[in-house]
Image (cartoon, rainbow, N blue to C red):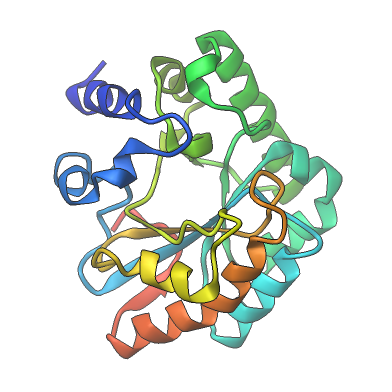
Length: 234
C-alpha cells in the first residue's frame, strides 16, 4: 500500500460522521491533492453531488445546471439507481459525469473489507448497466476511508475522490446562504465542491438549501472567472 493511501487511512479514522479530510482542508489539499480532488488547476472548480438520483430533487438540480450551461459529477447510490433508472439515464444523457457512492450509504469504519468490496461491486454493476458507462470514481459515505475502502477500490478498479469544499447542506439548520458561505470558506479554485441532490441520508428538507444555493455558487464562481465542470484528471 502506498504512502498516500496509508496517510488517507490515518487521517480518515479520526472522522466518524464527517470526513476528517475536509475538516483539515488547508493541510490535506497539500498532502492528499488527488484523493481530495484538488488537482484541477487554479481556473477550474468541479461541482459534485452525492446520494441521488432522487425524483423529487435531482430534476431541479438538472434544471439549474442546464440553465447555467454547467456540467457536474453525480456520485450515485446503487439503491437509488435501481429505483430510478430512467432518471439515472437522464442525468447521464445530459452530459454529466457519473460516479459511484456505493450501493448502500454506510460508514466504512464499521464494515469489513470483504463487505465493502461486495458493496462496491454491486453498486458499480448497477450503475454501469443503467448508464452504459464505465464507472471509475468512487466517494465513500461520509468521506471516511478505511483499509477496507482501499481494498474494495483495488478489487473493483475504482479511484477514491472526496472533496475540498462542502456546503454542509445535509444539516437541518442549513440555508441557501449558509451553504454558500461554507462552500467559500476556503478558496475553491482547483478543488472539488460537495453538495447533495437528495436528502435520503440527510435532514428531511435540507436539500432545499442546496436548490437555493446552487445558482449563487455558480454565479460567484463565474464572476471570479473560474471554469466549472465535472471532476477531471487535468
